[in-house]
Image (cartoon, rainbow, N blue to C red; front, side, top):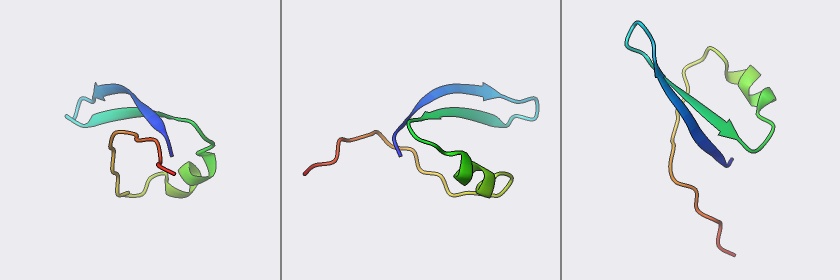
Length: 50
């Protein structure tokens, strides 16, 4: 899914919070994964080659 990094904030406990905007409907996936540990990979978008 394509998206953009939007913001980085720091919590009082030293936790870093990343805000990501996405170009798609992520609601169902968010509801399924909310509150669970996840594996996350962020890398630069590259247009798929045909």
